[in-house]
Length: 297
Image 1 (cartoon, helix red, strand yellow):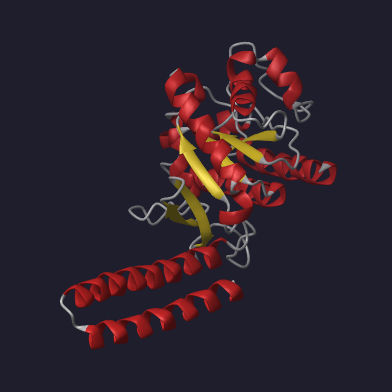
Image 2: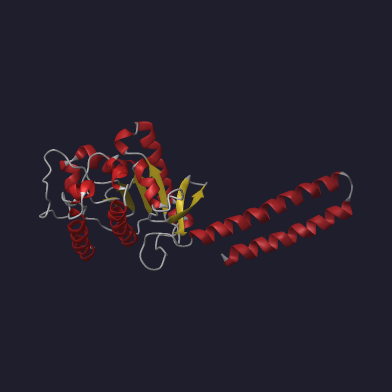
């Protein structure tokens, strides 16, 4: 993905040059430049909010290159080792990568509300989110784990504030695994061009920051990730919507057959053999339809 990373550097340079010449908080933050990870195509994509800006950070990061995640785990274990620990817990090993939703450097996440008070700030955010969309679509992981409660709103659309239209992913909640699954992209998405996505059928787990989760919560999260990956081929991916439609039809036929079986038993008990015989024929017909449906799937 070196070509993608190089292209991102050029795009980020353009965005941060433009907004550092603006005014106010946006200019201050954009002047600090940006930070981003050297991503790879992996099974699990962890998503954070944005890189921090600490007291020892350089004001201008013109010489910054994308950072290596393995090195980050060693050098900044307080943040990055949490992802490796979770990956180990759910049996993923090193088959994971990480990106932040935004590329600007700021420690206080609440400042995002200040940035979004005017059109310039909204544009600053939107231009970064378009890069994030492109990056996620190219990584195309088997599961996305969003490890920040504040990041959730930017995946969809803020329906209450018309000026704040974000990435615009549509979701279906999968009750089998307790996870949101991308089902398409809203026509109001900030994505340029055709409002479609390569991520249909990809499960997305929205969680809080791993540093704030207790051990029991982390174990549940690891178990959930493990189960989703274990059955990914059967229940997720590009054929997800087809599977959902198939499951609904299977439920319909199965419930029908069970109900008719119950009524047939009642008819036999009451010596209504003619009615029981009719129900038997209907059950056989439903069974045939059910088998044909399975063979077509």
